[in-house]
Image (cartoon, rainbow, N blue to C red; front, side, top):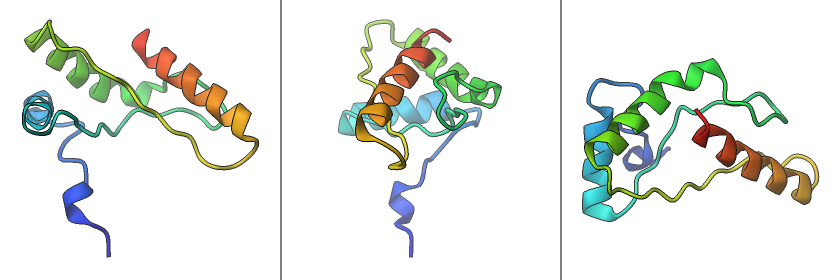
Length: 96
């Protein structure tokens, strides 16, 4: 049975940036879901817009906030290729 405490609490929802700010304030981190990519590609899909908008709101609410982004890919294929893809994906959503 899945651990319900690990389910994302938002994205996209109207209070998502507030929820993220609360998580960061309480625990120092927050999990973000809803940033999508095609398999093997680093371009952010349009379906990610709502999530990225909420992250932008969070940063606008607290301009001093610094985020450390961690991404992941599936475990198919060669490790070096997946590591490169994860790096490109992380860099890609910063451009949004």
